[in-house]
Length: 184
Figure (cartoon, one colour):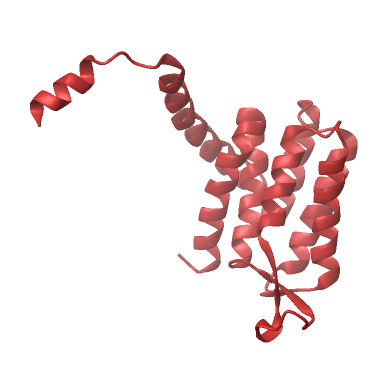
């Protein structure tokens, strides 16, 4: 085993892969610290924090004014899911419509697309009783903290690492949000 480890250590290192690995760790640390700072600033009000962070995304040029408005629509939709497992159809349609509008617009920023995609992925339409002809009910794919946690984390990740940071931040925020909603 030691000989194999020594061999592995002597292999040429892919600099791009190494930099990506280092950058990922830095991005995670910076995203967590930025999220904590925003949390302290808004005294734990995740919705207010998300709104402030959206403004910062716009200031940095990562989303346009129009996209910020669309992200605020997603934030309003998430607010309407608070405390609910079943999501009203109008809320689900609102999220889907924002996501589709961003997809259809070739000028949409990667940051806005990544955030909208993350929020849209949290809503899972299902039919009652498994009957394909039955009316659909939309459920949060998990608890409510994941939605606002992922949204806020995605925004903060975007602030730290651009569109690539959105995915890392969304995952961190969703994980933390899941624990917060379950009382962990």
